[in-house]
Amino acid sequence: MTATDTHRAIEAVWRIESAKLIAGLARIVRDVGLAEDLAQDALVAALEQWPEAGIPDNPGAWLMAAAKNRAIDFLRRSKRLNRKHKELRHELEARQETAVADNDTAIDDEVGDNLLRLMFTACHPVLSSEARVVLTLRLLGGLTTDEIARAYLVPEPTVAQRIVRAKRTLAEERVPFEVPRGSELAARLSSVLEVVYLVFNEGYAATAGDDWMRPGLCEDALRLGRILAELAPKEPEVHGLVALMEIQASRSGARVGPSGAPILLLDQDRARWDQLLIRRGLAALRRAEELGGAEGPYALQAAIAACHARARTPAETNWKRIAALYKTLAELAPSPVVELNRAVAVAMADGPAAGLKLVDPLTSEPLLKAYHLLPSVRGDFLFKLGRLDEARAEFERAASLTRNGRERTLLLQRAASCNQSKP
Amino acid sequence: MRFMMLMIPKGYESAKPGTTPDAKTVAAMMKYNESLQKAGVLLALDGLHPPSMGARVSFPGGKPKVTDGPFPEAKEVLGGYWMIQVKSKEEAIEWARRCPGSGNEVIEIRQVQEMSDFPPDVQKAAAGFSEMQTKSGRSKK
Image (cartoon, rainbow over all chains, first blue to last red; front, side, top):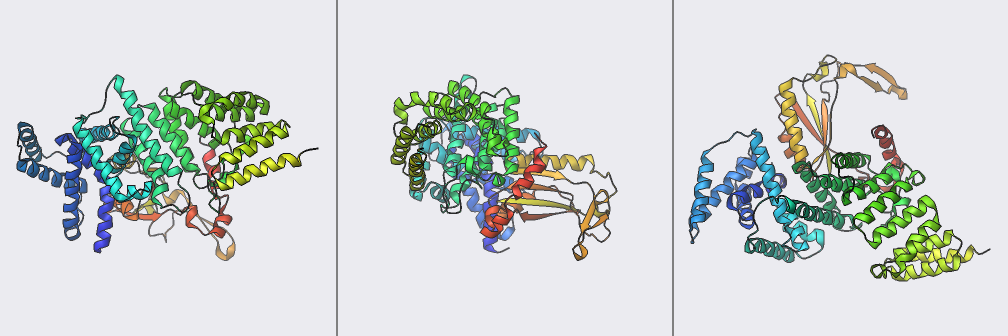
Protein backbone atom coordinates (compact mmCIF):
# COMPACT_ATOMS: atom_id res chain seq x y z
CA MET A 1 0.00 0.00 0.00
CA THR A 2 1.39 3.39 -0.92
CA ALA A 3 1.33 6.30 1.50
CA THR A 4 -1.62 7.84 -0.36
CA ASP A 5 -3.52 4.55 -0.29
CA THR A 6 -3.01 4.25 3.46
CA HIS A 7 -4.03 7.86 3.89
CA ARG A 8 -7.28 7.26 2.05
CA ALA A 9 -7.85 4.09 4.03
CA ILE A 10 -7.33 6.02 7.26
CA GLU A 11 -9.81 8.66 6.05
CA ALA A 12 -12.31 5.88 5.46
CA VAL A 13 -11.75 4.50 8.96
CA TRP A 14 -12.23 8.01 10.33
CA ARG A 15 -15.55 8.40 8.54
CA ILE A 16 -16.71 5.14 10.09
CA GLU A 17 -15.33 5.63 13.61
CA SER A 18 -15.12 9.35 14.39
CA ALA A 19 -18.66 9.95 15.65
CA LYS A 20 -18.54 6.96 18.01
CA LEU A 21 -15.10 7.99 19.18
CA ILE A 22 -16.09 11.58 19.93
CA ALA A 23 -19.31 10.43 21.58
CA GLY A 24 -17.50 7.95 23.82
CA LEU A 25 -14.91 10.54 24.81
CA ALA A 26 -17.54 13.20 25.45
CA ARG A 27 -19.22 10.86 27.87
CA ILE A 28 -15.99 10.55 29.81
CA VAL A 29 -14.64 14.10 29.76
CA ARG A 30 -18.10 15.70 29.68
CA ASP A 31 -17.00 18.32 27.19
CA VAL A 32 -17.74 17.94 23.50
CA GLY A 33 -15.03 20.39 22.45
CA LEU A 34 -12.35 18.59 24.44
CA ALA A 35 -13.64 15.25 23.17
CA GLU A 36 -13.21 16.36 19.57
CA ASP A 37 -9.70 17.65 20.24
CA LEU A 38 -8.72 14.34 21.81
CA ALA A 39 -10.23 12.46 18.89
CA GLN A 40 -8.25 14.61 16.46
CA ASP A 41 -5.08 13.84 18.44
CA ALA A 42 -5.82 10.15 18.05
CA LEU A 43 -6.27 10.64 14.31
CA VAL A 44 -2.88 12.36 14.12
CA ALA A 45 -1.34 9.42 15.93
CA ALA A 46 -3.00 7.03 13.50
CA LEU A 47 -1.70 8.99 10.52
CA GLU A 48 1.78 8.77 11.99
CA GLN A 49 1.79 5.11 12.95
CA TRP A 50 -0.54 3.18 10.66
CA PRO A 51 1.33 3.70 7.38
CA GLU A 52 4.19 1.67 8.87
CA ALA A 53 2.41 -0.65 11.27
CA GLY A 54 -0.62 -1.22 9.05
CA ILE A 55 -4.25 -0.57 9.90
CA PRO A 56 -5.06 -2.34 13.18
CA ASP A 57 -7.66 -5.12 13.27
CA ASN A 58 -9.90 -3.03 15.49
CA PRO A 59 -9.26 0.56 14.41
CA GLY A 60 -12.05 1.94 16.62
CA ALA A 61 -10.55 0.44 19.76
CA TRP A 62 -7.04 1.63 18.79
CA LEU A 63 -8.28 5.20 18.31
CA MET A 64 -10.19 5.17 21.59
CA ALA A 65 -7.17 3.88 23.50
CA ALA A 66 -4.95 6.54 21.89
CA ALA A 67 -7.48 9.26 22.71
CA LYS A 68 -7.84 8.10 26.30
CA ASN A 69 -4.05 8.15 26.78
CA ARG A 70 -3.99 11.73 25.60
CA ALA A 71 -6.90 12.53 27.88
CA ILE A 72 -4.97 11.25 30.87
CA ASP A 73 -1.90 13.26 29.80
CA PHE A 74 -4.04 16.35 29.32
CA LEU A 75 -5.67 16.03 32.70
CA ARG A 76 -2.33 15.39 34.36
CA ARG A 77 -0.80 18.47 32.78
CA SER A 78 -3.85 20.61 33.40
CA LYS A 79 -2.66 23.56 35.47
CA ARG A 80 -5.90 23.95 37.37
CA LEU A 81 -5.82 20.38 38.53
CA ASN A 82 -9.03 20.68 40.43
CA ARG A 83 -11.02 17.87 41.94
CA LYS A 84 -13.10 17.30 38.83
CA HIS A 85 -10.03 16.67 36.73
CA LYS A 86 -8.52 14.39 39.33
CA GLU A 87 -11.71 12.37 39.40
CA LEU A 88 -11.81 12.15 35.64
CA ARG A 89 -8.20 11.06 35.48
CA HIS A 90 -8.77 8.31 38.01
CA GLU A 91 -11.90 7.19 36.19
CA LEU A 92 -9.99 7.05 32.92
CA GLU A 93 -7.10 5.14 34.39
CA ALA A 94 -9.49 2.68 35.97
CA ARG A 95 -11.25 2.15 32.64
CA GLN A 96 -7.94 1.50 30.93
CA GLU A 97 -7.39 -1.46 33.22
CA THR A 98 -10.67 -3.21 32.66
CA ALA A 99 -10.61 -4.92 29.32
CA VAL A 100 -14.14 -5.60 28.18
CA ALA A 101 -15.03 -8.06 25.44
CA ASP A 102 -15.94 -6.53 22.11
CA ASN A 103 -19.08 -8.49 21.44
CA ASP A 104 -20.78 -7.33 24.62
CA THR A 105 -24.30 -6.10 23.85
CA ALA A 106 -24.03 -3.70 26.77
CA ILE A 107 -21.11 -2.05 25.02
CA ASP A 108 -23.19 -1.69 21.86
CA ASP A 109 -26.01 -0.10 23.82
CA GLU A 110 -23.58 2.29 25.49
CA VAL A 111 -22.10 3.28 22.14
CA GLY A 112 -25.60 3.91 20.83
CA ASP A 113 -26.56 5.94 23.88
CA ASN A 114 -23.45 8.07 23.55
CA LEU A 115 -24.11 8.71 19.88
CA LEU A 116 -27.62 9.79 20.73
CA ARG A 117 -26.27 12.10 23.42
CA LEU A 118 -23.88 13.58 20.90
CA MET A 119 -26.66 14.15 18.38
CA PHE A 120 -28.86 15.94 20.85
CA THR A 121 -25.95 18.04 22.07
CA ALA A 122 -24.86 19.08 18.57
CA CYS A 123 -28.46 20.13 17.84
CA HIS A 124 -29.02 21.92 21.13
CA PRO A 125 -31.41 24.91 20.86
CA VAL A 126 -28.88 27.19 22.58
CA LEU A 127 -26.97 27.08 19.28
CA SER A 128 -28.01 28.93 16.14
CA SER A 129 -29.39 26.88 13.29
CA GLU A 130 -26.15 27.37 11.32
CA ALA A 131 -24.07 26.26 14.27
CA ARG A 132 -26.14 23.15 14.76
CA VAL A 133 -25.76 22.17 11.11
CA VAL A 134 -22.02 22.70 11.07
CA LEU A 135 -21.45 20.92 14.38
CA THR A 136 -23.64 17.96 13.36
CA LEU A 137 -21.86 17.52 10.05
CA ARG A 138 -18.53 17.77 11.79
CA LEU A 139 -19.08 15.63 14.88
CA LEU A 140 -21.63 13.14 13.58
CA GLY A 141 -21.14 13.28 9.84
CA GLY A 142 -17.37 13.04 10.06
CA LEU A 143 -16.96 15.74 7.43
CA THR A 144 -13.79 17.80 7.47
CA THR A 145 -13.95 21.59 7.75
CA ASP A 146 -12.99 21.81 4.10
CA GLU A 147 -15.74 19.44 3.02
CA ILE A 148 -18.35 21.42 4.94
CA ALA A 149 -17.05 24.66 3.46
CA ARG A 150 -17.29 23.32 -0.09
CA ALA A 151 -20.75 21.92 0.53
CA TYR A 152 -22.08 25.26 1.80
CA LEU A 153 -20.07 27.48 -0.52
CA VAL A 154 -18.44 29.42 2.33
CA PRO A 155 -14.74 29.92 3.05
CA GLU A 156 -13.08 27.30 5.22
CA PRO A 157 -12.02 29.74 7.97
CA THR A 158 -15.67 30.77 8.33
CA VAL A 159 -16.68 27.17 8.98
CA ALA A 160 -13.77 26.65 11.36
CA GLN A 161 -14.82 29.73 13.30
CA ARG A 162 -18.44 28.61 13.50
CA ILE A 163 -17.33 25.28 14.93
CA VAL A 164 -15.09 26.93 17.53
CA ARG A 165 -17.84 29.32 18.57
CA ALA A 166 -20.42 26.56 18.76
CA LYS A 167 -18.21 24.46 21.05
CA ARG A 168 -17.53 27.50 23.21
CA THR A 169 -21.24 28.22 23.53
CA LEU A 170 -21.92 24.65 24.61
CA ALA A 171 -19.22 24.90 27.26
CA GLU A 172 -20.28 28.36 28.47
CA GLU A 173 -23.93 27.36 28.68
CA ARG A 174 -22.86 24.19 30.48
CA VAL A 175 -24.98 22.06 28.15
CA PRO A 176 -25.08 18.62 29.75
CA PHE A 177 -24.06 15.62 27.66
CA GLU A 178 -27.34 13.76 27.87
CA VAL A 179 -30.45 12.58 26.06
CA PRO A 180 -33.40 14.78 26.99
CA ARG A 181 -36.25 13.10 28.80
CA GLY A 182 -39.96 13.40 29.35
CA SER A 183 -41.65 16.53 28.10
CA GLU A 184 -38.40 17.90 26.73
CA LEU A 185 -37.76 15.01 24.37
CA ALA A 186 -40.30 15.81 21.66
CA ALA A 187 -39.10 19.36 21.09
CA ARG A 188 -35.44 18.40 21.22
CA LEU A 189 -35.96 15.50 18.82
CA SER A 190 -37.77 17.88 16.52
CA SER A 191 -34.67 20.07 16.58
CA VAL A 192 -32.45 17.14 15.58
CA LEU A 193 -34.76 16.14 12.73
CA GLU A 194 -34.88 19.73 11.55
CA VAL A 195 -31.08 19.87 11.31
CA VAL A 196 -30.94 16.62 9.34
CA TYR A 197 -33.64 17.82 6.95
CA LEU A 198 -31.90 21.19 6.54
CA VAL A 199 -28.76 19.34 5.43
CA PHE A 200 -30.82 17.22 3.05
CA ASN A 201 -32.51 20.24 1.48
CA GLU A 202 -29.20 21.98 0.98
CA GLY A 203 -28.05 18.97 -0.98
CA TYR A 204 -31.35 18.66 -2.81
CA ALA A 205 -31.15 22.28 -3.95
CA ALA A 206 -27.71 21.74 -5.47
CA THR A 207 -27.59 22.02 -9.22
CA ALA A 208 -25.45 20.36 -11.88
CA GLY A 209 -22.02 21.94 -12.00
CA ASP A 210 -21.92 22.44 -8.24
CA ASP A 211 -19.06 20.90 -6.23
CA TRP A 212 -20.03 17.24 -5.79
CA MET A 213 -19.92 17.75 -2.02
CA ARG A 214 -23.22 19.58 -2.35
CA PRO A 215 -25.48 16.82 -3.67
CA GLY A 216 -23.41 14.58 -1.39
CA LEU A 217 -25.18 16.35 1.48
CA CYS A 218 -28.32 14.36 0.61
CA GLU A 219 -26.40 11.17 1.26
CA ASP A 220 -24.94 12.58 4.45
CA ALA A 221 -28.42 13.49 5.68
CA LEU A 222 -29.83 10.11 4.69
CA ARG A 223 -27.04 8.35 6.52
CA LEU A 224 -27.61 10.45 9.65
CA GLY A 225 -31.35 9.79 9.43
CA ARG A 226 -30.81 6.05 9.06
CA ILE A 227 -28.42 6.02 12.01
CA LEU A 228 -30.99 7.91 14.07
CA ALA A 229 -33.68 5.41 13.08
CA GLU A 230 -31.52 2.66 14.58
CA LEU A 231 -30.76 4.68 17.71
CA ALA A 232 -34.36 5.76 18.33
CA PRO A 233 -36.41 3.04 16.63
CA LYS A 234 -39.59 3.81 18.58
CA GLU A 235 -39.81 7.41 17.41
CA PRO A 236 -42.24 7.53 14.47
CA GLU A 237 -41.18 10.94 13.18
CA VAL A 238 -37.62 9.70 12.75
CA HIS A 239 -38.90 7.02 10.38
CA GLY A 240 -41.17 9.61 8.81
CA LEU A 241 -38.21 11.85 8.02
CA VAL A 242 -36.16 8.95 6.68
CA ALA A 243 -39.10 7.93 4.49
CA LEU A 244 -39.40 11.46 3.13
CA MET A 245 -35.69 11.69 2.36
CA GLU A 246 -35.46 8.24 0.76
CA ILE A 247 -38.38 8.99 -1.56
CA GLN A 248 -37.19 12.48 -2.45
CA ALA A 249 -33.69 11.14 -3.09
CA SER A 250 -35.21 8.48 -5.35
CA ARG A 251 -36.03 11.23 -7.84
CA SER A 252 -32.59 12.85 -8.01
CA GLY A 253 -31.72 11.14 -11.28
CA ALA A 254 -34.84 12.54 -12.93
CA ARG A 255 -34.91 16.07 -11.59
CA VAL A 256 -32.43 17.69 -13.92
CA GLY A 257 -32.59 17.88 -17.71
CA PRO A 258 -29.63 17.44 -20.07
CA SER A 259 -29.01 21.20 -20.13
CA GLY A 260 -29.11 21.40 -16.34
CA ALA A 261 -32.64 22.84 -16.19
CA PRO A 262 -34.86 21.55 -13.37
CA ILE A 263 -37.73 19.23 -14.31
CA LEU A 264 -41.00 19.37 -12.39
CA LEU A 265 -42.17 16.21 -10.68
CA LEU A 266 -45.11 15.65 -13.02
CA ASP A 267 -42.83 15.99 -16.06
CA GLN A 268 -40.08 13.69 -14.81
CA ASP A 269 -39.16 10.45 -16.55
CA ARG A 270 -40.32 7.99 -13.91
CA ALA A 271 -38.10 5.30 -15.38
CA ARG A 272 -35.29 7.24 -13.75
CA TRP A 273 -36.78 7.08 -10.25
CA ASP A 274 -34.65 4.83 -8.05
CA GLN A 275 -36.89 1.93 -7.06
CA LEU A 276 -34.53 0.70 -4.35
CA LEU A 277 -34.85 4.02 -2.52
CA ILE A 278 -38.61 4.10 -3.07
CA ARG A 279 -38.91 0.63 -1.55
CA ARG A 280 -36.82 1.72 1.43
CA GLY A 281 -38.89 4.89 1.79
CA LEU A 282 -42.18 3.02 1.73
CA ALA A 283 -40.84 0.58 4.34
CA ALA A 284 -39.78 3.45 6.60
CA LEU A 285 -43.19 5.07 6.17
CA ARG A 286 -44.86 1.82 7.18
CA ARG A 287 -42.73 1.75 10.33
CA ALA A 288 -43.81 5.27 11.19
CA GLU A 289 -47.45 4.33 10.67
CA GLU A 290 -47.14 1.12 12.69
CA LEU A 291 -45.79 3.21 15.56
CA GLY A 292 -48.93 5.33 15.41
CA GLY A 293 -47.15 8.25 13.79
CA ALA A 294 -49.13 8.55 10.56
CA GLU A 295 -50.11 12.12 11.39
CA GLY A 296 -46.67 13.46 12.21
CA PRO A 297 -45.60 16.28 9.88
CA TYR A 298 -42.71 14.32 8.34
CA ALA A 299 -44.81 11.19 8.00
CA LEU A 300 -47.52 13.19 6.25
CA GLN A 301 -45.07 14.73 3.83
CA ALA A 302 -43.61 11.27 3.25
CA ALA A 303 -47.08 9.87 2.61
CA ILE A 304 -47.65 12.55 -0.03
CA ALA A 305 -44.30 11.72 -1.63
CA ALA A 306 -45.28 8.04 -1.47
CA CYS A 307 -48.46 8.72 -3.46
CA HIS A 308 -46.33 10.05 -6.30
CA ALA A 309 -43.79 7.26 -5.92
CA ARG A 310 -46.49 4.60 -6.27
CA ALA A 311 -47.96 6.10 -9.43
CA ARG A 312 -46.38 4.56 -12.50
CA THR A 313 -47.54 7.54 -14.56
CA PRO A 314 -48.79 10.99 -13.58
CA ALA A 315 -52.31 9.95 -14.66
CA GLU A 316 -52.33 7.18 -12.05
CA THR A 317 -51.66 9.58 -9.18
CA ASN A 318 -54.11 9.32 -6.29
CA TRP A 319 -54.86 13.04 -6.07
CA LYS A 320 -57.78 12.58 -3.68
CA ARG A 321 -55.47 10.97 -1.16
CA ILE A 322 -52.83 13.67 -1.65
CA ALA A 323 -55.49 16.37 -1.12
CA ALA A 324 -56.63 14.66 2.08
CA LEU A 325 -53.05 14.38 3.34
CA TYR A 326 -52.44 18.09 2.66
CA LYS A 327 -55.64 18.85 4.56
CA THR A 328 -54.34 16.99 7.61
CA LEU A 329 -50.93 18.63 7.24
CA ALA A 330 -52.58 22.05 6.98
CA GLU A 331 -54.47 21.42 10.21
CA LEU A 332 -51.32 20.25 11.96
CA ALA A 333 -48.83 22.77 10.64
CA PRO A 334 -50.81 25.47 8.83
CA SER A 335 -48.93 27.44 6.26
CA PRO A 336 -49.92 29.29 3.08
CA VAL A 337 -47.54 27.13 1.03
CA VAL A 338 -49.15 23.94 2.31
CA GLU A 339 -52.55 25.45 1.48
CA LEU A 340 -51.34 26.24 -2.04
CA ASN A 341 -50.09 22.69 -2.54
CA ARG A 342 -53.42 21.44 -1.24
CA ALA A 343 -55.24 23.58 -3.80
CA VAL A 344 -53.20 22.02 -6.60
CA ALA A 345 -54.07 18.53 -5.38
CA VAL A 346 -57.76 19.41 -4.98
CA ALA A 347 -57.83 20.82 -8.50
CA MET A 348 -56.31 17.60 -9.86
CA ALA A 349 -58.90 15.56 -7.98
CA ASP A 350 -62.01 17.72 -8.31
CA GLY A 351 -61.35 20.15 -11.11
CA PRO A 352 -59.99 23.70 -11.44
CA ALA A 353 -63.03 25.43 -9.95
CA ALA A 354 -62.53 23.60 -6.65
CA GLY A 355 -58.85 24.51 -6.70
CA LEU A 356 -59.60 28.15 -7.43
CA LYS A 357 -61.90 28.33 -4.40
CA LEU A 358 -58.94 27.43 -2.19
CA VAL A 359 -56.42 29.65 -3.97
CA ASP A 360 -58.45 32.89 -4.10
CA PRO A 361 -58.18 33.59 -0.32
CA LEU A 362 -54.41 33.16 -0.62
CA THR A 363 -54.04 36.20 -2.87
CA SER A 364 -54.34 38.46 0.19
CA GLU A 365 -51.79 36.39 2.16
CA PRO A 366 -48.78 38.64 2.88
CA LEU A 367 -46.34 35.70 3.07
CA LEU A 368 -47.11 34.76 -0.54
CA LYS A 369 -46.94 38.29 -1.91
CA ALA A 370 -43.72 37.68 -3.83
CA TYR A 371 -44.15 33.92 -4.30
CA HIS A 372 -44.33 33.33 -8.05
CA LEU A 373 -45.99 29.94 -7.69
CA LEU A 374 -49.21 31.48 -6.40
CA PRO A 375 -50.08 33.47 -9.55
CA SER A 376 -48.64 30.62 -11.62
CA VAL A 377 -51.06 28.13 -10.05
CA ARG A 378 -53.97 30.56 -10.13
CA GLY A 379 -53.24 31.30 -13.78
CA ASP A 380 -53.34 27.58 -14.55
CA PHE A 381 -56.77 27.18 -12.93
CA LEU A 382 -58.17 30.23 -14.72
CA PHE A 383 -56.80 28.96 -18.05
CA LYS A 384 -58.50 25.61 -17.56
CA LEU A 385 -61.75 27.42 -16.75
CA GLY A 386 -61.53 29.40 -19.97
CA ARG A 387 -61.01 32.74 -18.19
CA LEU A 388 -58.14 33.57 -20.52
CA ASP A 389 -57.67 37.30 -19.94
CA GLU A 390 -57.38 36.76 -16.19
CA ALA A 391 -55.10 33.77 -16.76
CA ARG A 392 -52.73 35.77 -18.94
CA ALA A 393 -52.49 38.50 -16.30
CA GLU A 394 -51.59 35.93 -13.67
CA PHE A 395 -48.92 34.27 -15.82
CA GLU A 396 -47.36 37.63 -16.59
CA ARG A 397 -47.37 38.50 -12.90
CA ALA A 398 -45.74 35.16 -12.06
CA ALA A 399 -43.10 35.72 -14.76
CA SER A 400 -42.23 39.06 -13.21
CA LEU A 401 -41.79 37.51 -9.78
CA THR A 402 -39.57 34.56 -10.66
CA ARG A 403 -35.78 34.99 -10.67
CA ASN A 404 -35.23 31.88 -12.73
CA GLY A 405 -34.73 32.72 -16.41
CA ARG A 406 -35.99 29.44 -17.75
CA GLU A 407 -39.10 29.57 -15.59
CA ARG A 408 -39.80 33.10 -16.74
CA THR A 409 -39.67 31.95 -20.35
CA LEU A 410 -42.10 29.12 -19.63
CA LEU A 411 -44.52 31.43 -17.84
CA LEU A 412 -44.42 33.99 -20.64
CA GLN A 413 -45.11 31.18 -23.09
CA ARG A 414 -48.17 30.23 -21.06
CA ALA A 415 -49.29 33.85 -21.05
CA ALA A 416 -48.92 33.95 -24.84
CA SER A 417 -50.92 30.75 -25.22
CA CYS A 418 -53.87 32.54 -23.64
CA ASN A 419 -54.10 34.72 -26.78
CA GLN A 420 -53.90 31.81 -29.21
CA SER A 421 -56.75 29.98 -27.53
CA LYS A 422 -59.16 32.81 -28.25
CA PRO A 423 -61.96 31.49 -30.50
CA MET B 1 -21.22 5.91 -4.32
CA ARG B 2 -22.70 2.48 -4.15
CA PHE B 3 -20.73 -0.71 -3.85
CA MET B 4 -21.62 -4.35 -3.90
CA MET B 5 -19.75 -6.63 -1.56
CA LEU B 6 -20.01 -10.03 -3.22
CA MET B 7 -19.55 -12.99 -0.95
CA ILE B 8 -17.66 -15.88 -2.55
CA PRO B 9 -17.67 -18.89 -0.20
CA LYS B 10 -15.20 -21.64 -1.11
CA GLY B 11 -16.93 -24.92 -1.70
CA TYR B 12 -20.33 -23.40 -2.36
CA GLU B 13 -19.93 -24.38 -6.00
CA SER B 14 -20.52 -28.00 -4.97
CA ALA B 15 -22.99 -27.42 -2.14
CA LYS B 16 -26.02 -29.69 -2.18
CA PRO B 17 -29.52 -28.22 -2.68
CA GLY B 18 -30.93 -26.85 0.55
CA THR B 19 -27.52 -26.21 2.09
CA THR B 20 -27.66 -23.49 4.73
CA PRO B 21 -24.93 -22.06 6.92
CA ASP B 22 -24.78 -23.20 10.56
CA ALA B 23 -26.33 -21.20 13.36
CA LYS B 24 -23.03 -19.85 14.68
CA THR B 25 -22.04 -18.47 11.28
CA VAL B 26 -25.48 -16.97 10.83
CA ALA B 27 -25.32 -15.29 14.24
CA ALA B 28 -21.95 -13.73 13.47
CA MET B 29 -23.21 -12.53 10.09
CA MET B 30 -26.36 -11.07 11.62
CA LYS B 31 -24.24 -9.03 13.99
CA TYR B 32 -22.17 -7.78 11.07
CA ASN B 33 -25.28 -6.92 9.07
CA GLU B 34 -26.57 -5.02 12.10
CA SER B 35 -23.37 -3.01 12.27
CA LEU B 36 -23.85 -1.97 8.63
CA GLN B 37 -27.44 -1.05 9.36
CA LYS B 38 -26.51 0.94 12.46
CA ALA B 39 -23.89 2.84 10.50
CA GLY B 40 -26.58 3.91 8.04
CA VAL B 41 -24.67 2.48 5.06
CA LEU B 42 -26.63 -0.68 4.28
CA LEU B 43 -28.96 -0.43 1.29
CA ALA B 44 -29.75 -4.08 0.62
CA LEU B 45 -28.54 -7.61 1.20
CA ASP B 46 -29.49 -11.15 0.26
CA GLY B 47 -28.21 -14.69 0.51
CA LEU B 48 -28.35 -16.95 -2.53
CA HIS B 49 -29.27 -20.64 -2.73
CA PRO B 50 -26.43 -22.81 -4.05
CA PRO B 51 -25.82 -23.33 -7.80
CA SER B 52 -27.09 -26.90 -7.49
CA MET B 53 -30.55 -25.33 -7.28
CA GLY B 54 -29.90 -22.92 -10.11
CA ALA B 55 -29.32 -22.81 -13.82
CA ARG B 56 -27.10 -21.08 -16.34
CA VAL B 57 -28.09 -19.70 -19.71
CA SER B 58 -25.36 -19.32 -22.29
CA PHE B 59 -25.59 -18.13 -25.90
CA PRO B 60 -23.34 -20.22 -28.17
CA GLY B 61 -23.69 -18.79 -31.69
CA GLY B 62 -26.28 -16.36 -30.39
CA LYS B 63 -28.79 -19.06 -29.44
CA PRO B 64 -29.77 -19.54 -25.79
CA LYS B 65 -28.70 -22.78 -24.10
CA VAL B 66 -29.82 -23.79 -20.59
CA THR B 67 -27.61 -25.81 -18.25
CA ASP B 68 -28.86 -26.95 -14.84
CA GLY B 69 -26.59 -26.55 -11.82
CA PRO B 70 -24.26 -27.51 -10.34
CA PHE B 71 -21.57 -26.25 -12.71
CA PRO B 72 -18.42 -28.39 -12.44
CA GLU B 73 -16.28 -25.85 -14.31
CA ALA B 74 -17.15 -23.02 -11.92
CA LYS B 75 -14.32 -22.48 -9.45
CA GLU B 76 -16.00 -19.64 -7.61
CA VAL B 77 -19.67 -18.89 -7.12
CA LEU B 78 -21.60 -16.21 -5.28
CA GLY B 79 -23.13 -16.91 -1.89
CA GLY B 80 -24.72 -13.55 -1.33
CA TYR B 81 -24.22 -9.81 -1.50
CA TRP B 82 -24.48 -6.54 0.36
CA MET B 83 -25.12 -3.21 -1.33
CA ILE B 84 -23.77 -0.26 0.63
CA GLN B 85 -23.69 3.53 0.24
CA VAL B 86 -20.29 5.00 1.11
CA LYS B 87 -18.05 7.84 0.00
CA SER B 88 -15.13 5.89 -1.43
CA LYS B 89 -13.83 2.50 -2.48
CA GLU B 90 -11.58 2.60 0.59
CA GLU B 91 -14.64 2.89 2.82
CA ALA B 92 -16.23 -0.11 1.11
CA ILE B 93 -13.01 -2.06 1.59
CA GLU B 94 -12.87 -1.11 5.26
CA TRP B 95 -16.40 -2.42 5.74
CA ALA B 96 -15.56 -5.64 3.91
CA ARG B 97 -12.53 -6.08 6.19
CA ARG B 98 -14.87 -6.11 9.16
CA CYS B 99 -16.92 -9.02 7.88
CA PRO B 100 -16.50 -12.10 10.12
CA GLY B 101 -15.08 -14.21 7.31
CA SER B 102 -13.10 -17.41 7.70
CA GLY B 103 -10.35 -18.88 5.54
CA ASN B 104 -13.22 -20.03 3.38
CA GLU B 105 -14.56 -16.71 2.28
CA VAL B 106 -13.58 -14.03 -0.18
CA ILE B 107 -15.46 -10.77 -0.60
CA GLU B 108 -15.20 -9.02 -3.92
CA ILE B 109 -15.94 -5.31 -3.93
CA ARG B 110 -17.49 -3.82 -7.06
CA GLN B 111 -18.75 -0.30 -7.59
CA VAL B 112 -22.35 -0.09 -8.77
CA GLN B 113 -22.78 1.73 -12.07
CA GLU B 114 -25.10 4.70 -11.80
CA MET B 115 -26.86 6.40 -14.66
CA SER B 116 -24.69 9.49 -14.33
CA ASP B 117 -21.58 7.33 -14.94
CA PHE B 118 -22.69 6.71 -18.50
CA PRO B 119 -22.30 8.97 -21.55
CA PRO B 120 -25.55 10.50 -22.91
CA ASP B 121 -26.08 8.02 -25.75
CA VAL B 122 -25.80 5.06 -23.43
CA GLN B 123 -28.10 6.80 -20.95
CA LYS B 124 -30.68 7.16 -23.69
CA ALA B 125 -30.46 3.47 -24.60
CA ALA B 126 -30.67 2.55 -20.94
CA ALA B 127 -33.79 4.69 -20.38
CA GLY B 128 -36.43 2.34 -19.10
CA PHE B 129 -33.85 0.25 -17.24
CA SER B 130 -35.17 1.49 -13.91
CA GLU B 131 -38.62 0.65 -15.22
CA MET B 132 -37.55 -3.00 -15.40
CA GLN B 133 -36.32 -2.77 -11.82
CA THR B 134 -39.72 -1.29 -10.99
CA LYS B 135 -41.60 -4.29 -12.29
CA SER B 136 -39.68 -6.70 -10.09
CA GLY B 137 -40.23 -4.53 -7.03
CA ARG B 138 -43.89 -3.83 -7.72
CA SER B 139 -45.13 -7.06 -6.17
CA LYS B 140 -43.84 -5.89 -2.77
CA LYS B 141 -46.26 -3.38 -1.26
